[in-house]
Amino acid sequence: MKLKYWLGLLIVVGAIGYMIWGGLGNSLVYFITPSEYFQDQAKYAGKRVRLGGLVKQGTVQYDPKTLELRFVLTDGVAEVPVFHKGTPPALFKEGQGVVVEGRFEGAVFHGDNLLIKHSETYQPPKEGYTPEDVRRLIEEAK
Amino acid sequence: MRRERPGLDPLSATLLGAGYLLLLIGFYYAMKAPPDVDQGYLVRILYVHVAAAWTGYLAFIVAGIYALLYLIKGHPAYDRLSAASAEIGLWLSLLMVIGGMMWARPTWGVYWVWEPRLTSVAVMIAIYVGYFLVRQAIEDPEMRAKAAAAVAILGVINIPITYMSVYWWRSIHQTATIDVINRKTHMPPEMLIPLLVNLFAFTVLYAAFLRLKGRIAAFEARWEEHHG
Image: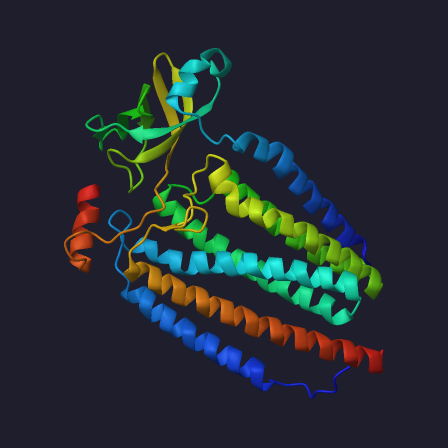
């Protein structure tokens, strides 16, 4: 009975079609920068968007009791204050590239999903790299 | 047709032995490699993830080349090798995705996200799952080989798209650390060498399994010819 393979094939072809025309269309511009948002504000008004940029130095406020995280997202030109409820990912730090998913409520962007975009550069810690040093670095980052 | 006895031939045995030995050496080097300043020891997933990704791409490209050779020359051996290469590529891609998900959760914050690189990889895997469904669905050996060859050749188109997705579109996935497009390497030698050793080990093992699977498929075809 070969019918089940043809059915499976139909499902796979459908999935590929959906991913290319449905999914990929949305994800090609996976995130917009704050500048792009402000340039085309009418288009994004009230919609869920993904904002990408860097965490501005000296703007991170995190309350571990209420899990309220506030920081300013910048692309070097425009800045957006972000509010996110939840524990930040381990790699979250000032100057880190992030993508926040959510929507604007007034002037503040309320994110419900916070992703880290790390770079392609890997390097060992400067002063030697004993496991103890790294463990300390990781503890400090938290 | 060659009249060889079934079993492990010297070349397959040598490739397999060398591949596993290199994998052990690669594992030793990976465990000696320093942690990353931001990610700590998580960066070690890269030694499997990147090696599996590259050899997976290689396997799919080789499957496409054998498919093309089959269409030109019509010898069933090319069809068998094309299928063998596609199957190894599929396993390597699954290994790459599983390793990638384990790496993404603690770094990016999620196991999976529908961004350009991950979406194009999902398309790639779906194409080769489809490839094996085509092989199962068609009974006539010649029709099956021709249809499968078409899928294998079309599938290759998606490989450069997948590879370039991180350069062409905005993604969460970082660009290549061994950046062949801009000819730069964004890692120190003590991380690069373990990666290259693992990459070599995966490539040798790929060659070993391709040969083994090709031979097994040839013996199967011969057996079916004699016994129906």
